[in-house]
Length: 258
Image (tube, rainbow, N blue to C red):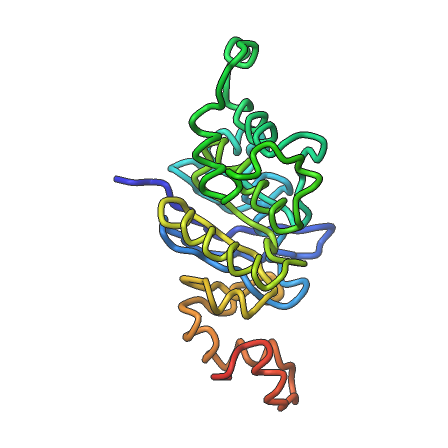
């Protein structure tokens, strides 16, 4: 039985009495490109921070049969959990291939790292192909476009054998073409892995999400397909605000069917 799925049960995060994530229950299976959406302050980033071990939490976040809550960040990473941030963290003075090789080295022994190689590890070659940067293997990361840096960071997670990948607003600041390519990249990855995307770009969500979880005030407000979530009156109320009847605003956030 494949246990590589994410199961949150009563996951809660509090900061000095403020409940940022409030008893969230959520399941994400492999092949499901899950988007987390919601207004600012809904708890989206805090939720994936909790799963990553970056903030303390209560409840359970079970992955591959293990509860991640209470574990150290590096131990969670060793269980195959990867995370990217809004601003790509790459080594700009190194090449694309070197960035990926260093990231892959995090899972190699000291003897393997010390050994001189005449070729790149297969995992690095495969990752470059997946993220579409094979032709830029020898380019310095600092010369890449904003979108390409984000793809490189995703590749740096992939080479560490991550099977659960969580991305925080991966298309923020990207061009329309880069967003489209990023969506196709996430679809390729989600075919074999478990992927969770925190996103504010509703056009991007509508184009690529398999399923959507809407958070509001730290709680799960709605969950389902894009069409189901867009049609939910509770979701429309949260995005529009009480007493707001502007169809233009509804369409901008939720789509033409709002």
